[in-house]
Every structure is written in C-alpha cells, then in structure tokens.
Image (cartoon, rainbow, N blue to C red; front, side):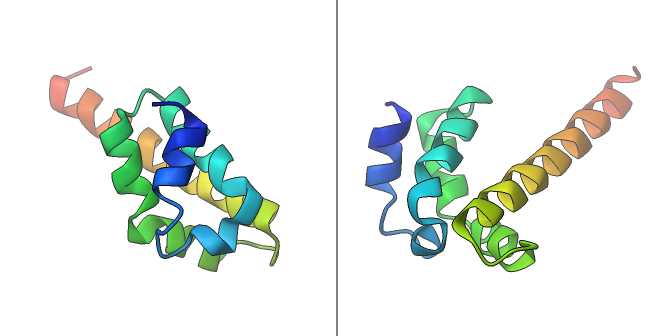
Amino acid sequence: MNAKQLAKKTSDAFSSSRYGSQWINCAALLLELKFTPEQAEQQLRSKNMRWAADMASTNTQSGYFVSFAAMLARNLDGMKKESQEWLGK
C-alpha cells in the first residue's frame, strides 16, 4: 500500500479534514518510518492526530502536519530510549 492509497482509505478518520492536503504527507511519513500499512492506519485513526492538530502552533493544514511530525518524532525517540534502557545499552 502506498501513501496515496492509505490516505484515501483513512479519509474518513476523525481528524483527516483538519489536515486537508497534508493528510497524504502524514501517511507517507508513517510509511517512510517503516510502519506497516496496518500500524500507519491505526495512527492515522488515533487520537494522536487530533492532539497534534490541537497543539499546532498555526491554524493551517501545514501547521498541523508539522505538529504531527514533531509529536511523532518525540514519541519515537522516547520509545527508542526506553528500548535501549531495557536492553541495557
């Protein structure tokens, strides 16, 4: 599944309208980060998307995407650190 297909499949997600044309970029980012299509769909349908949009510093679709990308980066960095601590690295 590519980003365009994933974005179309999740176009009915609660927050998709807030992201508008940036929705496909959110899908593409998740796939580029090696989320499976199923995992990416779960993220796109999750409350994380609403929270990222709510926290966006600007009330624009591109601002929502930047906020989503930053939130995702923080979460992934935190998960990486937790796994390294668990593995004793």
